[in-house]
Length: 114
Length: 111
Image (spheres, each protein chain N blue to C red):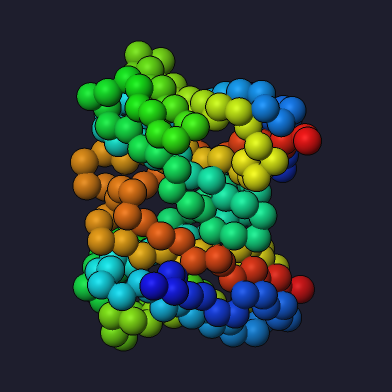
């Protein structure tokens, strides 16, 4: 299996622009997670889906952030409008369970908002 | 050590030494713990896990120790190699809840 695939790997955008991050989970995994990683706050869970349905979005920082999972093989995390404080690494992960050793992370999308 | 400001606590060791990385977890009710390794430019990777009904678990070159009394988790790496250089995170969960990650410790291994 190719693992969790994220795109883009790197993005630099101007403040106010829309950013869309994409994720393809591992086939057969019915949980999908979006995390944000910064030096100050570490790895934070933003939202997770089970069978394409959003279960908990309490980690989404504000209304500028939205996530969708239209089917079992694709998810997006959108930031509109983007702000410099959104600069971080965004990880997608997928799993067969909500927690545990079956969670696999993608290589991350490195976002810089200038 | 504790994380202060923008700097991760760092452990520097020589190749061949044994390394011990510590983690203080937050929830005394947590019943499942995982150690992850994150290499530069990559996502976290599972190393080893332990349930709260155990106090020690061994893997290949790694051992995890759990002290529930003081909410402390440690990862021991035997015969540390340069390829072990990475940031190490502990994570905890309770029941079927999602994982909560610690801030991480950077391990630097000198040849």
